[in-house]
Length: 313
Image (cartoon, rainbow, N blue to C red):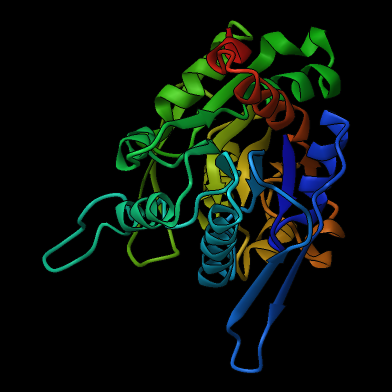
């Protein structure tokens, strides 16, 4: 078994390799003057079980193309099995036609990864579970919930657990939020919102009694931060005692960090599926929880042909 990293999130790959107690396979990744990508695998991988770690985060097209070229290089180097470990699957929000003459880009990207030669995909918290069906190869979709559960138990005293209320920022995340709330025997609330323009959200109503409760917003992606910031303000206006958020993928495009800093949110906890710039790391309201151990355990189970789903039982 070998672990290889693209350039999208080297720290996460290093952490995964440490969990597995394996050295990373050395690879050269270069860009020519016209930004064409060149890859050379510097170790023998013939007959090896390869785990290639590369989230397709911003710049999404660059990182996606790098992933495809690395898969092709491994295929031509006679690797036995190639698992594309894509902690954050870009284009996942384009999982259906939203109007006439629009694409289903998530399906296209799934086809590209399969056709490049990957034998399996390991990802985390897909924006829509049905995206697993877009792939014509086995796909394991991990959940960040166990990582967040452990973090809540560590950071919030047990005597305060009875006052927790888990909140879905929209109707689409209700199942995800209810699953986390169940672990704390807690209730849930739902934010009813609409998007007047792309990247902006407007809270219409709060479904559920939030008065006097410590609210935890739970979602899979934070991009511009508009939804979370407006939701936190609405929850506090409806009587919530405090509002924090647990989000799997910190896309955090501009002006997300500025919005979070100025918002009424106590804290936003994200995972390390996406490598963050210094301005995110220096933000006092944003904290990172690592999924390296969870990914490492899943990789080990795949390599040993064991059940991945047992990680969540």
